[in-house]
Length: 300
Image (tube, rainbow, N blue to C red; front, top):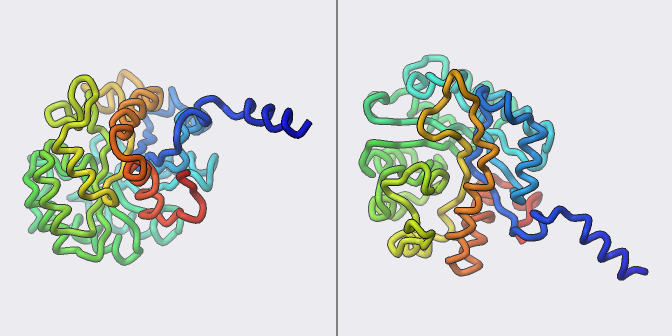
């Protein structure tokens, strides 16, 4: 009888949760353009399917991340985004209210980080003039929370100056430098122990000019060497934005959550090419430790 009950219980577990090892998705968006096609309940169900045991959520506006957390309080980590609508990704760095709103959000205890902050050539101020960014970096250190920064169309020098100027701030480098090659990412990690590389959107559909893998999914040797060199410094996220050719369309909802399986199938493919212990660190343990959830979340 006991054996029958055990088998019955195992059969009650959703197939996805049995088949896939647990992962942390450290780069999730939940935006106003996604609400029409993905309810909070739908989003949590998608995480169930992919066995995402912890999700770091960026809401646009920020309050949307709290809507997901209310459904799964121990599973969702909201981080504060200053973005209230699509155009804010290139306005936030000049908005005098950004720092005040971030301070209020962190002081509420509802948010456990800041980001994703886009610092993109042609729109962002130079580091010397980036007063808002510097204040947010100091604020993150003061509240002891990570800050996620997206740099693009820049050299590694920008992140090097940033992380060395704010050594007490834990920085998540979204997409691990976006278009930068592994050697440039290595320069930053070697000089700044306060930087972690996120690997969201390093897939065949987004940063296609500098992929992690070959067209048939084989992890490129230079990336594999970098991951093995810094096994405690990388994390994985899906960055569920879709379609990818135009962000925040006014005439079409963002169906990124419906593509979560696509993204995680890709990431699980290259993770499987690493030693199991390293893969588990990158897929789960590093993010759990960075966000202080080791007591609540198990990666085994």
